[in-house]
Image 1 (cartoon, rainbow, N blue to C red):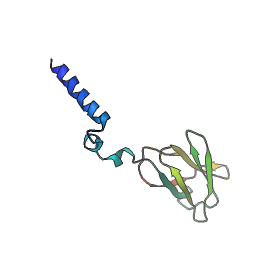
Image 2 (tube, one colour):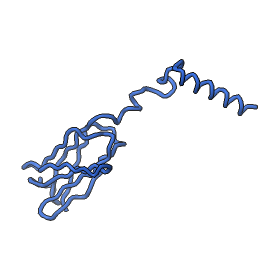
Image 3 (cartoon, rainbow, N blue to C red):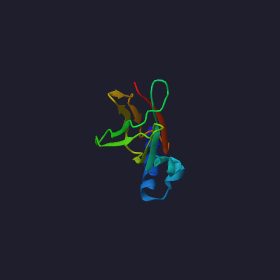
Length: 124
């Protein structure tokens, strides 16, 4: 009997939501929280060697894990790199290469809600 009342109450709430009688915000919380990872972010940082010295002219790669599309950037004389308009709803691999050396690969995750992703890529 109690289970039937719970099912009836859930059905009434669902019907009210579907009909638009009950606003969604009080039920599910602020709507901004649902759409937090929509939009663009920047990915930037520095390429450094084992002694934390900047590595100029390293090629930094940003690879979309889903589409396999790759963007690249040549680090500046102070080892800096910058990617603009990186889709927040996608996951990316980020690494640097120069003269046969490669950094560890880092992941830029769609679960990370930061609009600015800053990191250091250390060459091996």
